[in-house]
Image (cartoon, rainbow, N blue to C red):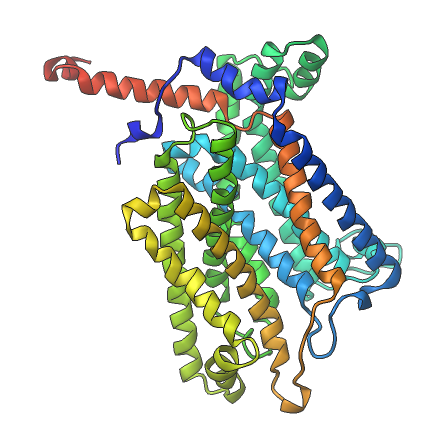
Length: 459
């Protein structure tokens, strides 16, 4: 694929700037009734969480032996969704992948809002959420410190670090475009607001030099987080002796699954957005094709992890582990979900070997939705499926979610949509400065390719 496929139409810089800033000045129907619906759903989430805090987590379906259920499933799922934004922002930036320029800010915003949702569940799962600060190291008068062998403490460290670096990375990339919005604002009030958040950015060579250095440092930090954060989350399970959890393959398995679900969410957001907001000249089919290729790669890795799980269970000397992996999981009460997970996460992405499928927005959207659902199902299988079938048959049990469980899950989806729509309404969703630079680079490549051989060597 030629790099010039990443840009079609190629309007001049002023036209491009007007196009990308238009939603900030004129609005869009997407910011009216969909925003109100998402806001009402977020309010329902607040009511459900308040009811849980007042009444207790007995309002959930958690019971013996399934002490962890929807809350931890949702936590791991939302953290995984956020990984694609960090991958696009950090790793693709370090490797100088040009195609990231059109979608990196959308992915970064997706990361932040996914982390917000993920951070709700460890706090809610404590039962007494007002004591959340007990999970952080602080100089208590009684000389007490958090139990660092507790997985809840690990989650707090992972989420806080991940959220802080992601927020700094996102905001640093926003500075040039906030200054552009400041200079193009139609009113003095908006110019002052955008100018306040632009932190005095003037686009001088000194500003750009410091910006590039800080951006590269944060990209390096975020690259390590792509691997470390979800590895820490996976260790919440791997340290336990529960059949189906005690596995050393969990860290790479969870990271690959996180990238798969994260890029699926990128497609779910980008495919309709480019059509609704007429961004076809900015987010091209070539961009979608590259995301589909990553889905194919991560789906194949996840499929390989499933094969390794089968081989590990086959040779495991622990009878309980072997029974769960080879009998209870594929043929037990959640067997139908297990085979759906295999089909959705490992087999369905193989359709992207076909170039026509990679370049079809309809196929991309359908596959992304199925992958996202089955990735949530995989987390549910790991959490609930393992706890339903422990080592003692006398302790086996079932699980049924309550209305509060379902409402909280739906409410987090509404909260995510609400925050994302607010982001589209008030912040440049596409990095204008980076896109201008990319277009100039591609135009230079085209000019060099069109020049005679002697002129090219002279240049």
